[in-house]
Image 1: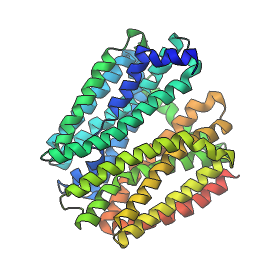
Image 2 (image 1 turned 135 degrees about the horizontal axis):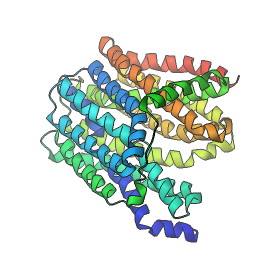
Image 3 (image 1 turned 135 degrees about the vertical axis):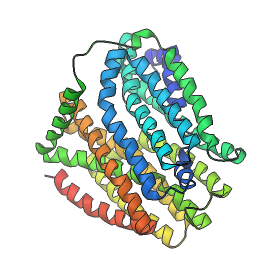
Image 4 (image 1 turned 120 degrees about the vertical axis):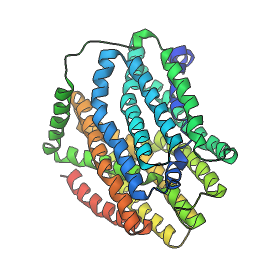
Length: 411
């Protein structure tokens, strides 16, 4: 460890950045959100609509949130995002109807939109102040490790909570505590990180620029294939990742509308905790794969792996094998977190430095647009047919879709 890295490790503000990441990932309700919603007689289509609403709010407000951060300051915007989160938790706690849950998802989407990118920008600003910008990779790795530890501890603590709480709704009130602490933590950040400045760019102009940036997909077939590959993989994954909750409910209890047993709750907490730890390990070590083949090759193999895991999940449902189901989801989580560094590496080879922000913005827009459509469509398909057919169909579609992507990536 260099002298500079030792100074970074002991720096008070860097410790606050790490604490921020740890606290924001203490979402104790995460392993149980879908079965919580199912408990109020919502079906998978309605839950898909709620997830779609969240993504739509994030998509619509992500760009305006940047303008608000410039005008009112990054600290104030980040503090506001935690107020949105806490409002969301309150509405989830009240629960009861689709309309109330829609309000909860609206506020959660606002929180995500206002948080996205803001804290990372503050870290970069602080590193520039301290002349540590060349250590940004070290600092980002350190803060991200605290976030991943937070996710794992959150899942494991959720087991203790569900064993002692009368119902799952209590998880949302407990979840307010770390977010209130994060709100106070952000308030203690130095004013120099607020970086308030006047901006003459209108929201309308920024939206036009955002849509115009999609035109980059027409110019470079290989880059187009890469962006569609990354955004579609993430959209498919984020749409189905929490389906493990109703699936375990189905296999252990017999119906997704039945109340979750303690066995289901404990299993979900352990599964989410282990998946987060394994994903962190995969993310840190995936670079070793590129020593044998290019990032693009591994991205294609992992997308095929997604299709195979979807088929394995379908098989697990049909033969009533929860272990097979959990193994498939476990491997999916590892694939997802291993694939992101591969995309960043591949994109770095194809994108000019001055285009990086625009290209990554396009990838984010594509992912959000796909998820807005896929979430309710998957929910509707599962309700009208079955979860096993949903995953079997998804596996087949992914394998065929990836053949087309491979052709585009090799143009």
